Length: 245
Image (cartoon, rainbow, N blue to C red; front, side, top):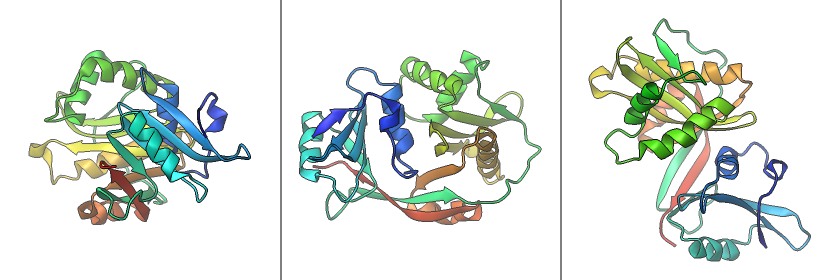
């Protein structure tokens, strides 16, 4: 049986790298966005599930009833599912899952802006432009959601700047307790090959550790495995994206 998650305490699961996605949908739900749990006949939670704009996240266990899950997401109008397991033999896309295990972050003399409750709306506009470079994404809705997460400590973003312009960015858009997902790593084309992405990631990790975040994950294309390995990340598995059901 699938039930709506009512309390934060219901979100648990051995430090799964997908837990921040479940928590974010639960805490900042709007419209049809929400988080659910699947229970077995004994009332034990077997699966966690969330949706944001029709994009689902699934944390399964050996007891997951996948037929019930598939029927549910079809009914809810699913666009895609990110999962810790394959839902069919050939996943639409497979990403490499990495965890940061570096002992020390490299210090840098670069100038960074760390987003917080005092950050201006103009700074958020510049950040939005970088995170969604070349994409058609509504600023107002994103700003309302993301700025709340920043203020509440449920997201973190750092930007390398030359004092006038943003050059590189690294973001953890979803944080849950001691777990963070890193994404939104981007450097402007004209400033690449200068180590700016590396510096931005290390600065982000430094800021996350200040908030006692100890489990730092990201997933990436296979072509970026070597880059993240050199930064102190180790591959721990795969994350699967399904877009056809």
